Figure 1 (cartoon, rainbow, N blue to C red):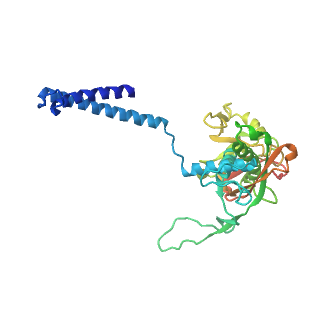
Figure 2: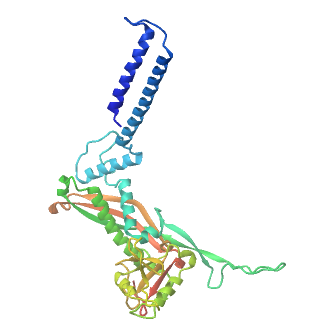
Length: 389
């Protein structure tokens, strides 16, 4: 739509309307008289044309503004942007040019604490990289967290349901509550940044720190959430729900079917397989009685394989096939309770790595984990002496 042409047309129509109106005004040299019916019709026609042009111009202006206008950032976006600018300047040791309402990050106003928006980005990235953390039951509690767990009072006593008859008492029985206690154990991740990036406009310091820390934290956390640590947390492999493979070095088709059945139907919806890449290679060679491979292609997922209808995740932190090893984990990760204290803090070490022309960024976090529902998780244990894994 040509706005200039419309405006020129509008001006031309206005001149024609003025020429008609002049007759009634009695301008110099023109006799004043009443408009004829034809002149009235022409005047009304010109007026309608101008009105139509005005509407077209208004629509064109709105369209142009919509195309060029930028969406106003939300309060959260504005805060995140300010925090990122302050964070980068603090790491690089620069004094930033402050905008209204902003503060420099330094030792006097909490500069040693990572901004919330960046901490959340690290946590989100860790969950993206660590499926078991993304699927577990998450808590964020400062002190000791007690999770109530319902179970049998002993090996024979539990709540029962049975047929009843009138005037006959039901047999009373009961279960009992126990608890899973979660505290927090301190862990840290160190990232080094070369000082030369200060002059590199293309390099995003925040993205680098978020990605590097997330990768290091995810690798560490995944290992602990799977295998646990004797003196610290308990991993998913500690579940008491297990199946003996009947072999020290081979996994059978029947092993996988029976292991899947160890998890109750109600928990099958979000269940998945977790195994070491070498175990995956061995499972990949398995065929059913009709010589069809058990692993199925699934291009809709990040890792394109499904086993007995469920997704497969690979982890170098899983034990390999070997005597007494827990070679495969199956089930719903929500059976693992994790207390992940999300107040990640950061310390910047400028002098310590000065001889390497680098800046150190240390991230600290606390977490703990324990199996809170053994029915949701099951392990395939190779025959032999049970290993620590």
